Image 1 (tube, one colour):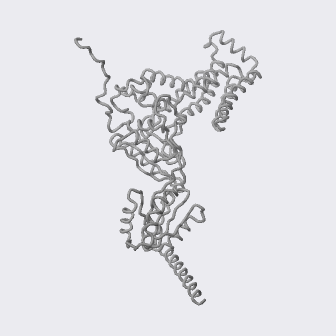
Image 2 (cartoon, rainbow, N blue to C red):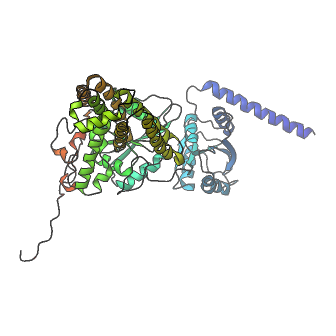
Length: 531
């Protein structure tokens, strides 16, 4: 009985000594605390940092006779991977004579026991905290002032699938996922160049989101690269969840509906932009990669233009420009002609339209606004609802509401045709963010058309072109190579000439290395002997 009492007293005394050491450690250290040589103190510190979270685990271990512990978050690591490459090697060495007497020997031990595995040596509690949050398993040993963190991330991530917003008929079907490492792998797969760089950044005081700045050294303009790097470093926010949040921070401070940063979820498009001298931003957790600088011409091009004959690519690209103008102008032109300029229509067509509008109680501008707002609501409903019923709601809703509105005498049949053509034309845009600009400007042009007729439409277009001419994306004119006009770059703007004629990179990007393929030429058919 006396021996048991003595044992309990010794245990209580040891606990008091540990608590005193913890208190003295807290009071003497300012700022970022260093890892303590006693495992129990480090355990208390980690517990105090993470609180009572259910996914934090601290396990006692012995490594070559030394007491130690494992710390990790079960929600961020692969437990099977930990057991295979970490726990089993440690258990084999349990109880053996210690050969680790200092931090240098500890690092040497990690190099020999876990060669080929990704590990980090940490010396402060802040480093330990960040490593645990990033999918590392941390090992602390008694008598050591440095800890070892082995990378064991979870492998649960979305498989590589076909892009949903930028589909192509002919071309690669791979798209980026939310994993930044997987996105980097897809880019490396296409660009096997040792000068391809991925600079890491951490943004968000709460989320600590990993950001990667990608570029090819020797091709990108150093001034543009420095500007992109400076804008990323100047971001101060508490959370980053998607690349769209980064886009707002780095875009030039201009009130404009037009996107000044290009975004894509296609690895082949990203690789082409890198080779042309642009910088890319990859955000961990987002499948969309940002490309800069961006020009207006970028939003009318897709990767499929270069995977099919140049004549067909030129024809389809020309259709995109026409579709943008239709989506922008058609409702405003209808309002202006019906309200002010009847003489522009053939007499039979004008009589037909007026006969349809005879029982309509609203003027043309109200009719257009009602239909446009109704279609925008249907569009959003089709996007936000489950996929199984979303398409049905948008199609059936448009047909039923349109037909019922015509029969009820609220709108005319020609109005349904105008709105349908406008909607279809807006879907032609390869980039969703750019089509939204046409959707917004369309309402402004309708108001101008109702006020001033076609003169108002022309005035609105005049101001829009002037606004576009004033925009800059990281110092590059938004309308280049059209304004300023660059003759060499016209091979790949509205027209898409054969690939072998494009011997230089787009000079509108101001690349450091302009020459792309100096020896490219069109092959000539073989000549018969004697001719």
